[in-house]
Length: 143
Image (tube, rainbow, N blue to C red; front, side, top):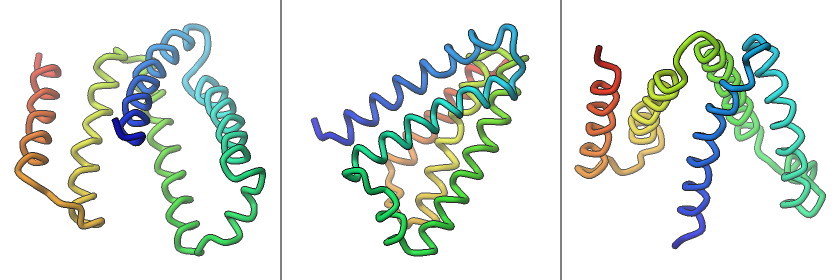
């Protein structure tokens, strides 16, 4: 199997665990403090990871980056932060299975934006898969 497929499967596994662990850990903490703690751990691990994979020279990689790339990555960080803030607030009072399900609806937004902005192929297979995801979300959220 190609490395990116294994990495994607691991990402899905860890994303699934993330929600359960976070909901379980918010028994005595509010969503904002919970998210701050989680993000601190994420920050430390991501910085350590950057040092490992750039031979200890992440600043050189940043210095060589185009300003547009840095801006887009900063905007990605902003949207990630907003997503996490609202996700944690929803999880604190909502049902984690419902919140996670609705959150995964972002796949549809990603598919559409990848097609419109990145000009990635939008095939019948992609349309069918996206439609099945939408139908699945509708079925699982229908009262």
